Image 1 (spheres, rainbow, N blue to C red):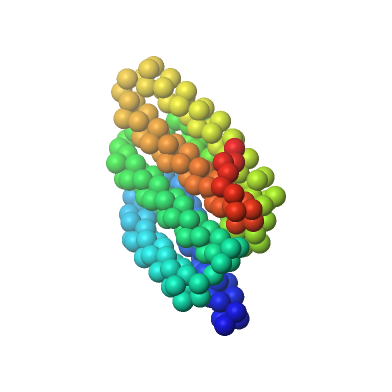
Image 2: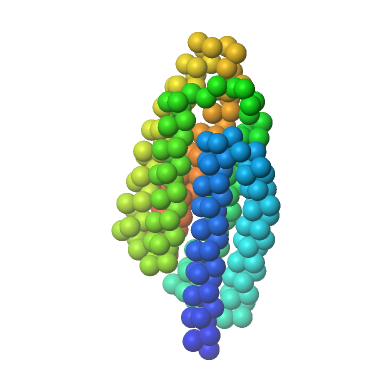
Length: 218
């Protein structure tokens, strides 16, 4: 019975990693669509999100089935809860990738880009993508030390977010015709900032997994 439980638990973590990789791919697509103004690519995010939502539901159902049939206790139960909570965080990351795609679709073809803000956005996306990758590895290895280090990177994400706020405000103040462009930048930056928060949440789940204590990393 214990062997069966361990196999099912391992399968949950494998499925979680797959889910996280899919969400990260959505982030890559969203940023590529933003950079190239590729509306067709942006539209792909909607169908991708449906698949990610379905995969999240599958993980939830499998996790609840493990709880009911295997009745895990203490640390084992924390492992199941970690997968459940992390899968929700990942699903929300994918949701924000869709929000970025929507902003790209709404963008006017003839609107000018701001090179400085574009650079900030790409820097944010690169950091967050690596955070997601590393957080998934920390979950898989149950590595609290790595989780704490990864979560600390969110400070850099927040600094870039504040830089975008300042630059977008300046853009809209100095060029009134660029208000819609500025608003679009703010929406995209806001989604990225939330992605960073959810990646940090996943790291907090790893600490909970090992200690049983819910803490806020920052």
